[in-house]
Amino acid sequence: MQIINLYPVKANEKPYHTIKIAVDKSKKQIQTITVVGKDGDNYIYDIINFTANPKIKDSDFKFDKASHPGVELVDLR
Image (cartoon, rainbow, N blue to C red; front, side):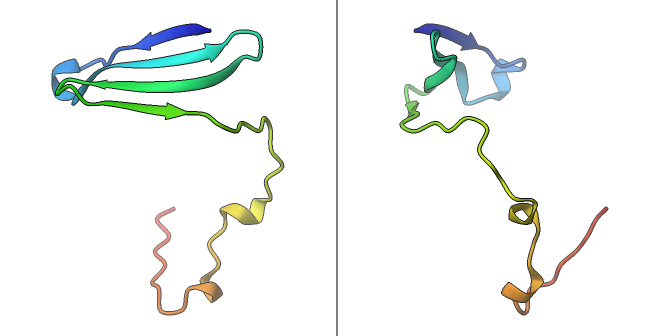
């Protein structure tokens, strides 16, 4: 494992002081992410399953108005 420490640019404005990323060097995959909070709370994210380069359809990123009747769609492009 290789540990990468990330520190915020404006640390006094953030509720955390460090983000630690543990990377499996041989697989080149993230294993855990730990957010170390200033108030003593730590949040740990364990990556249980990782799929590299999954096949994703373009339709997965399009909003289907027919599936959501009564919703107002505002396109700000």
